[in-house]
Length: 377
Ligand code: GLY
Picture 1: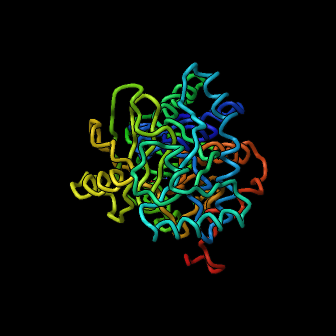
Picture 2: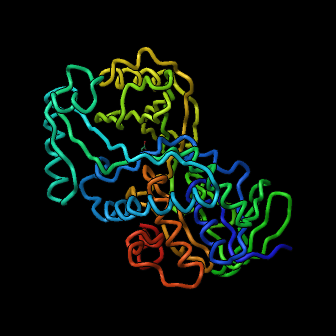
Picture 3: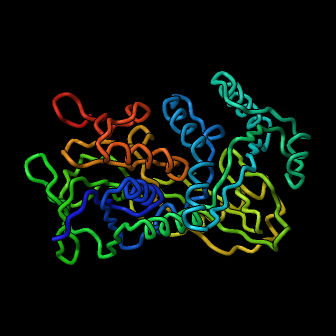
């Protein structure tokens, strides 16, 4: 029987960062994942874009996204100094562009919404768009520039987090989870696939899209479903980048890594746990990105990627204590998992070391979908 202060179920960016932060606070931490770092965090594009991705009616989520974006420089600096690895954090800004006048009106609406919220965004004419990104299609009608929407290389980030966890002494279990052991309404421990038991003070569910079906936990307790996203990795020679900023249309985004790579995404599909790459998605992504950046036609199509975003009923994450004593959640981050990694890890480390739930995560309590009778609403 192993004993542990915290067992983290799921080794994506969020689970790894929470495990690392909790371990740095002196806790014994175990992390359970057969393939850490290879889920949605691996497939992601790494955009840190609270302003260009702002949605009507999601102002609370916007505040959390902004808070996490603010944390990024210091989070990255600490991670890089602990591990000696570069995670490709680039403050290169994001240009959002319209293909036609209809889309340009939509961008005008979005820009006014951003202005009402006091967000730093700049409205651009078509000429100004091409001034920023000379390879944009001549048909581009206008756009929005957000200098503060950055990017990180999500795969390097996850690699550095794995290294930071190992160095700090987080124990990894790649045999997978058999079940979480609950007695009454209280956590008792967990059982691994090989039969080993871990007696732990707390469990953190950070299993992304799989968080809704953790064996041993009530099926409706964590309302997360998979939302499929397909992406492409294009590649050109070093120094030949077709864009220097992240370029977004209304249906597609292209994130240049600065080393010839261009990550193009993404579909948003309700297809359960299906992870096939479809010809239709490759076609649509290439068609849509070509209409913005025709130069992509010259690039090598090096990789297709699929991720299952953890979606929730209100598109906002589940962070904090769940209804079973000892169980916490850090999941349901939907389209913002990479962005929300620093703030989620910080909040979980605070709770697991005995602090109160920080005020900034109260709106994201995993308990918010329960009515007073205890039934799910
Ligand atoms: N945040 C980008 C995506 O979910 O596709």
